[in-house]
Length: 427
Ligand code: SF4
Image 1 (cartoon, rainbow, N blue to C red):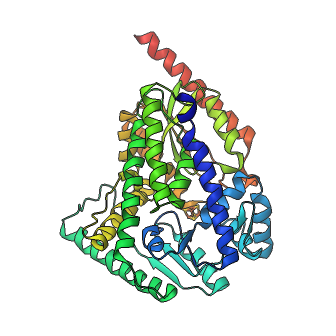
Image 2 (spheres, rainbow, N blue to C red):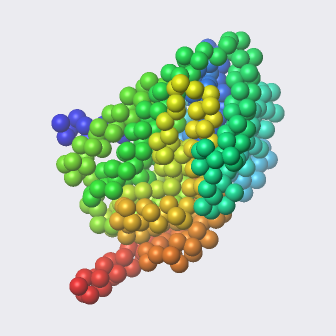
Image 3 (cartoon, protein in one colour):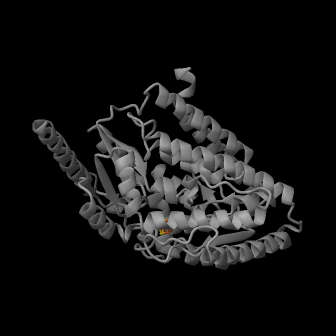
């Protein structure tokens, strides 16, 4: 059983991903209608109900970095006139668009529609690029976020109901747009099916994340977690996605029951804040795992999952109202995990028995990175937990220094080791 179940999520996730890129290439040839979307607020359930294939340019860009060819794409966009300063995902995508969709994993189809949300400012400007290049309609979903840390307007309160209705009207507008683009009416039965699949994925994702409380942790949030996130986004609202996450949960339950953790021995339990360093993805992780550091939790698993970590369950008896409620709650949660994560970090520190927190601001992503220094100071004032700040990028190798990262990481672990020794000495 161990041979067949352990690692199944990672290998099947990779295979599903390759199939998905195949599907994108086929769509590019056949002219199947697609929608360009973002991971935070893809509205995949609505799109799938219209048989519009979602395309995630953020994921396409990320893949160029993992495959170590991002610099070619960044250079092409910079030659075209984009500043080295802006989000690397945007530039890699611009280069893909300029190359008629050519991508290391297939050919990216052109969009019939683009959907942006206010979860990231860059989304709005990025979607304008597609509008100019492809003359496609752009739909911007404005989701009211938390007005401050600890903002509390729960479902049922007048404020929440106002925000929910605001989101629902926008979703109804999007449905009208999808109807005019595809020439078909929305089938409520199809929508309920996609919502049911997402329910299953959310339920399992919440449980998978919670299982990492065990010792050793079942999976590494940075490496394996990124594969699971990819499937969560790309397959959202599909039967394949639901089956994958049911099986992933089964794998994690097995690993927890049999104390099967990550391949390296877990000595220090860490939380990661920010976006991973994709240009050095393996090596970056090794710099921690060589010391026995395991990432048992990460805000990336929350915001890049568009808040699906909350496990929200759509009520299929009132699909539109419930979809609006789910989008509002989940996206608000995703934004909170980028802008106001202090309370959540303190909770994870306790529940997941953390030994330290790693803050990783990156040049490209100001949305996630800007507040990290303040968040670190806030958390450190409220708990006695070692922390490390290291800077790099998720795309641009020119600003990633392996030697500097290693120095900082080694010093961090030396500090953790001596802290542990001091703690033993006091017993
Ligand atoms: S700025 Fe950050 S959140 Fe926004 S598109 Fe770029 S990587 Fe994504």
